[in-house]
Amino acid sequence: MAGRFAPERVLLDGKVLPRVAQGQKPAAGGGWSWDSPGQMVTISLPRRSVTEGYEVELRGGVGYQEHAMYWQAGRLARHVRGVAGQLRELAGDWDSVEAQALAVAAKADALAGKLQRGALTLAAARRDIDGLADAELTALADSAARHAKEERSRLGAVCAVLGVSLAGRLEVTAGGKAARLRPEVMRDSIAPQAVQRLLASLSTPDGTRWSDISKDLACDPCFPAGLVTAAVEVRGKWAGLPLTGTLSTTVDASSLQLFHLVGPFDNTERKGLETVYPPETDLRIGAELQGKGGPVTWLKTGWRWPVRSTGGPNFVNLEPLFKPKDFTVAYAVAYLWAPRDEDAIAYVGSDDECKLWVNGEHVHTYPDPRPPAPDQDRVPVKLRQGWNTLLLKVCQEEGQWGFYLRLAGADDRPLEGVWTALTPEGTPPQ
Image (cartoon, rainbow, N blue to C red; front, side, top):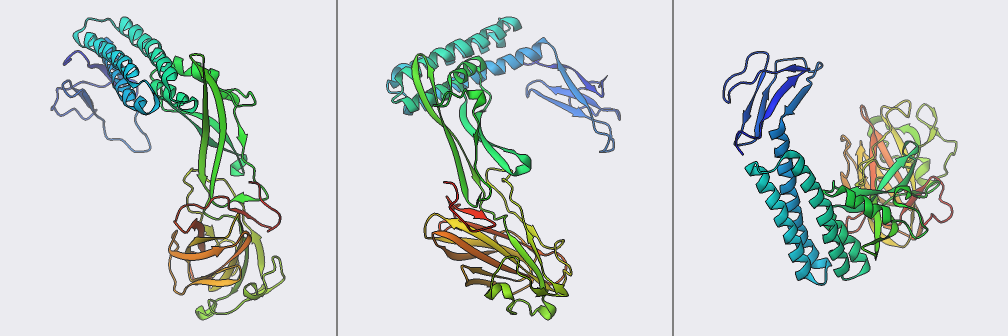
């Protein structure tokens, strides 16, 4: 292939960049070279301010496009050989399906060989590869569907052949306050037309077509405080045979976001940590209390769906919320609903010192100043079935002020079925 698959031109900001011999130093205005055996282009650009940026365009001739088709044929062959291994677990009559898969791979290899020898035009290569990917993979998916061990594995077998997987994804709306499950096709398929035929056959049990599938995740006034799993069943047909599957997604909302906050109380000479203020003995949300310099302020935080399925730490920044802010104390109150009595772990990070109570029982003290970070303290706690009250005391000297707080199971995995609310009333949706 050396010498046949080379880019023709490289443009910088719309102007042709001079080509230089490999290993030759380009001029100050930049240049490019091509390593044919390694199939690699090297581009040297002139010095420029990072605010200006570069616009570089690589253009290839017929040979370059043929190289792309050669790669496509090789990808098809590799994919089908990989599928042959996956189908061993999904297809009952393994031998016949494997033989068919290897025959498709051989055809793809033959097309790649013709391209390499220059025995196939670009137009013919594109036609043959597209046709092979669509027709042969469709036929292979038909065989996999017929030989699948059960209805649910049939959808997995067809998806494996077509090179995709079907899943649910969380679509966050209303500025993070609402979310819904939407269907998603994972990975770009090598047979997009066949995939579209598959999707056109899929719907939910109530008849909602693939493109219209949408399941709202209920919350407000109760919000998740652990692992959220959303799922929807889909049904369809392939080769006249029924398909069944589940689209699902999970979101880790373990990092607590919803709090009542009250402060500031006095922390002069760092005495605030051991000074008992009213929230520790008589917790009444909104109560009129005297703090440092006058009446305290009660505040509420909001809740948003995590932007990533794995969740992430939520830092509650107290610094802009209370005045005065130096040498002070604030309290955070969270209400958690648990579906059963269970052991859990509270992970605390704070700036500075802190104390934690669960259902009125003191469970943790950190006595020294520190900068905040997630999961600085690991505190075993017990949750009871129904509503639980968490009270966190956070002291402040100077500078940054705030905390992290999240809950996990005793095995450090996210809790399931746990909810949070600003008012501990009723039973959250299940």
